[in-house]
Length: 420
Image 1 (cartoon, one colour):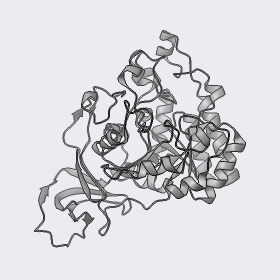
Image 2 (cartoon, rainbow, N blue to C red):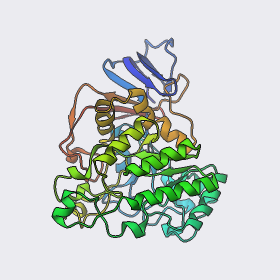
Image 3 (cartoon, rainbow, N blue to C red):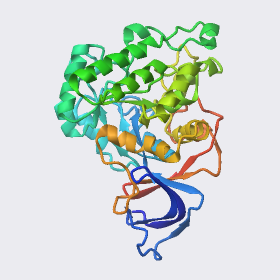
Image 4 (cartoon, rainbow, N blue to C red):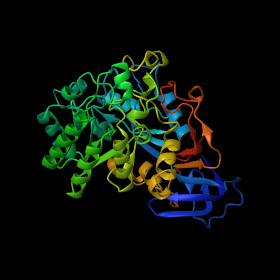
């Protein structure tokens, strides 16, 4: 268990609304009040560092079971800890799909991991979209949310039934909001590279119509409804309108959709293919504005590992998805804090209290008496993204070669330290 005094550290706690420099005292894995006697503990000079509650990511893929060459729980958890995360919500699009109590328990029961896994489970049996899974048993086993991520539940009747049952269970439904019939074979938004390489275009309507459908069903059922990996300006506008009406609708902004536009894809590179695809510059502007004005209450990586071989054959043949756990903190700080002027307290909230509120769990905090879930961030030494140094087994990042301004240097999860 962690026992140390982090001297003169800048502490950011969104729950308290505080941004202050003070000593952070942790004894036997518990945060202590500032007046606690601590001369017997190791004294660590943390001047110039930031301490925040450990970050939460509500959208990660660890490919376990099914594709251990791309990622396992162990490698994914190591990547999460290295990125500053203490809690991650794993997605159920594994092989087999996460629609059983056994699958949920397997995610939870690996106690040797440096982060805490909070598994989501399937909305439908086998993620096939036809029959609602046994949500009651899955929730009892420990599922914190329901999603068929990777596929939209396209049948309105099935989705509505799932949402009514999820509401009774006090669990959110998270949707991969892409209408399959509208997306077709599209892999990229309209942009110069699409024209140059003759790539099939993924129309923005495929996402926007799905978001509007989900909002309509949210209004009908009252279920907490979360839209995953938003990429379109019209999606942000629809969520803003729904929240203004008091509907329990939330949306997440992923680092790659905040940082990159389709017009900026440099070459026929499979590491820039994700689902939904990168939006255009107007979409990026709308996403950033949505974060700043509170329409989008949280960040999430959609960490989607793939083998190097599968991503190396160009845009058209590559699978959808990019990794993000080890770059997310630096990318979101660069684009939202440095470029957009987002307050550091609001930025930390998007990685902590926003995700916890979605899941209906206690807000992460640095308050005395809490078990220590803490991340220490270094903002003094920019670092270069070199994928071969990742803890993840995968290398599919669009940020290779970027210089990022912030890096996690220590995470403490449930009182236990993980050096990163």
